[in-house]
Image (cartoon, rainbow, N blue to C red; front, side, top):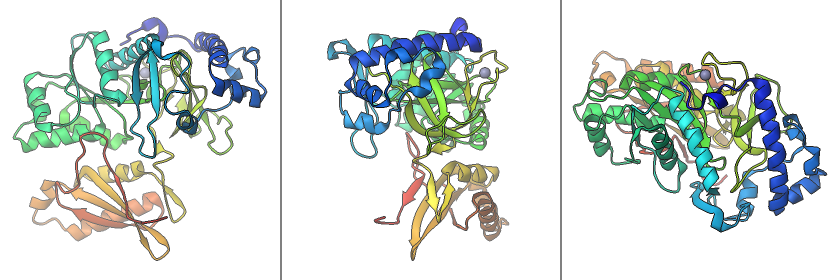
Length: 434
Ligand SMILES: [Zn+2]
């Protein structure tokens, strides 16, 4: 299903032409309005007239999170404050938050992208959208809210938290689409069972739109089984607009990037050169139509692979394969790169483990250690003949094979890994000063 059939089914050459036209306009726009970009262009020896088509984008300099930090809070805005109608900010786990300002047109464009995002996995005005993303400075709640209203869904702005109330509303209001983090969806299913409900029978959910944290296909299967829904992946980041930069269609074969607005590239994070088709690298976005704080070649630090083949849904908008993680999330254990998503993938292969786990980093002498705390299901506890030592050994062996390093495994009782009502906390660093 399409929200905007014309834009969503543009052919590759039509997309390129439109992207080129929008890039030319954007480059002139930021050159005229942003001291940062004027200086960056001068340093790179580039003038707006040098940019003629979309492939010329490689001549342009990158923008980084540091640029946003250095210009905190409003110095990268390209319009006066009287034209800004909304401000969002990222949580800023390290240092100051990243601030984004939206003009009325920016909100409109984002809402359009969100409408496409809700319709692509099968949403329509007949749906009731149970929106459990947090409302506030975080973009998740309001992004889905505006998109849902534009599609014509009945939007329930429940926001994050207060799980008991969420369950009550899911049962009584009958939400058909659930939007939240994937870890919260599995928590809702588990909490429903604890309250004596059967989420498959008592809820009317049929589609889930989950994002804001990396998750594996194995986790997708868990969620789909627990809630009896089609679980789809939404991708976004506040610097670009918020959620709705990319979304999976009903094929569930990678999230379509709405590339008439957000032009993607994948680069080698070390050299800054574009990688070949099908190769993994760092995802970079240029916002082709933003006014408040347009970004040129913004380095997301997310690692992915792009697929430009036509999708069975009829769209050519490139698909990003599941994010392996942020380059920031990557753990380096004794010189080996480890992504939490790799560990999740192994854990979810065992039906004995719940979808909650914690990775504890420690030190033994000068060496880093990794302990995977895996929570067993209540069924494992009540199964008197289950050999816990064997289960632990099996998990350790599978994990070590997948990661290529030796690790420790600890099995913990059901319900002991702390649940989060927003983004899951998966890593605990006990290494002290580095
Ligand atoms: Zn598709």
